[in-house]
Figure 1 (cartoon, rainbow, N blue to C red):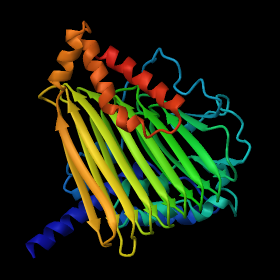
Figure 2 (tube, rainbow, N blue to C red; figure 1 turned 60 degrees about the vertical axis):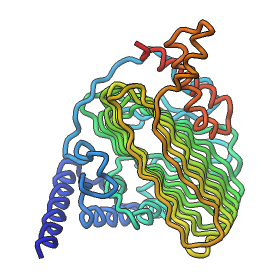
Figure 3 (cartoon, helix red, strand yellow; figure 1 turned 90 degrees about the vertical axis):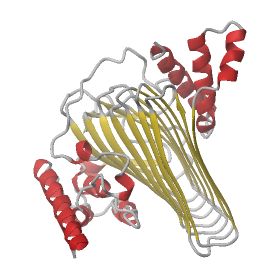
Figure 4 (tube, rainbow, N blue to C red; figure 1 turned 30 degrees about the horizontal axis):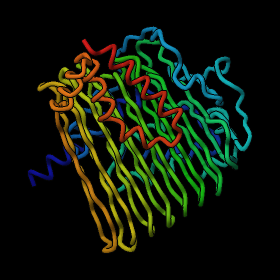
Length: 435
């Protein structure tokens, strides 16, 4: 009885926190097709309550500043650097503190694309996104609750709706600018890749003092979705993001995230195989210095035959920075010929930094090849000595070893020009932080 009583007390506390957050962030007035999924998400949020440090998948990360009614202020600054992906021929869209900036954005049109803003499209009675908005998020609430994603579906002020009907030659590039110290942005994007279509989505920027973003991606049979994201610049920002992806037969999903700076970043990915012979790769690299907490939480469900998943995550940490990786591969009964690979590794540049990992496999099929591994280590002294003996300065040698360490994750990017640009940004960050 005492244990049940404590459980009831915690549930009531979670609901009280959710109600306090809702009181501070009212629901947008939605009268069209989005009204129903928003209301359903609101019900999920009230039922789940907001996350707590005692939750199994939050025990390494304190969600308080992501959940509390008001955001913690975050200073802004001029980065004095060129826009990442700026040299790419792309369709460029800009949000400033969560508000769409039409003047800084290209027109919402492109060959093989249907694209619209959520805040404008949701006023209609019928839209292609109505069958997806909140649908994959709701599916992703089992078996692990993700209440901050439900909050997003209910409260998102805007977002981009993208439907790829063919092989889109130009990437769609969303830039998030942060100009106000107390901004609190909630954006929800929906992507539908039709059968045989292909789309690349690029994202970058700090977005807001606090940023909550959901990306729902539905890839139909033989479709392909490529996603490259760079989270950086403003160090005091706090962000939580969720990717929910559903893959059809012979489809491809590939996502890579680079993170530098940020007091708190939590990136979740929930990927579901529903069609045979599909491929999903999700990878990330982060570099943290000082007051830095970075959490990658991934859940991949194999519910189809002969599918391949890869999780590759590398974290470089110094001056007390903390990294977290929680990754699970669930292979359901009947999902034979599954090939699941998971690796998470950290490079600790001092004794004060910390890496916490929770790799998991849960398998109910007997003809599979699944593996997971997690390691933590320091700079290889033999390799460092090799560089030093050839006249390379110590700081430069350490940077070369760090770049070599994260290379496996960056190699997951198919576009080598984009991979090269991210490597250059990493090298510049290492040079700035080599003191």
